Length: 365
Image (cartoon, rainbow, N blue to C red; front, side, top):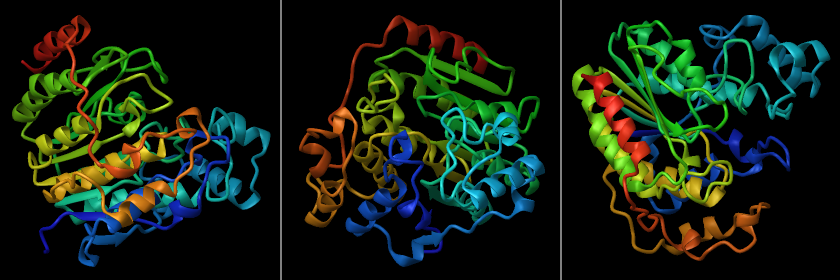
């Protein structure tokens, strides 16, 4: 059991919300954990509770004054105009909410713990890849992925690969390691979508693959086998971190990609054993049913667990208890309650993706 994958979670996500009208009003990590437990997939020996990262740990990357501003905002449940302007706390979709410091610090603590534990670790609360050194961005206040990668660097690793399949470009991580030869970043994301970065290669250590709307399972498979796996073969990484945002799924309200969770499962399965250390993060995802089903399935892949054709009653109850105040939540399809695996969404490999394959192969060569 000592070599079994570990899952790091926290109860802070159950009671925490960004506010009733925010895309992150939905329960994601708590539902994922509930679903995994209801399936009988989480023996106590494989679970760890996430610690809260200390100020010293957070300031390994983040500006100390910025972290102090987050703490002030949580204590006051408000932000003064100077802090809002300078740090974008309480602005740009980054609200002040009850755990505005403790929740991101918990996410960071979980990813740091995962990096220190080694082996295979799933941290669904991690993946806040937009956070900047001294600025909140894209619903992200602390960049837990950067902190985990820095922990690996501090351990002396020299070949680290960060993979990102969120619908939004992992700009904060790429920027943090610009010019750092020990960390390679590879992001597959929707072209022309916020944060409007990642349109082309940012240097020899950063490979960006902006994909068109409607990006399907066949196209993801083509990039996986045509670019991602060759990058891994060339790099021979000592550690891989995969940000597995679920907003690239077809039913997500904040993107226009068309993947099924089969694509995520196939991607995880292909890369999880390619390095001695592997961390699977969460990330984006704004439909509670599709996010929980995707991330729970990721845990199944890590453990080589078979996917039941129909969920048992306890797991179905977890999904039926959810509510969603966007249009997709008014009449959710039955399979969101009863299955874990989506129907495949195969399709043609379009010229835009073929061009990415050609460009990517040149970069890998």
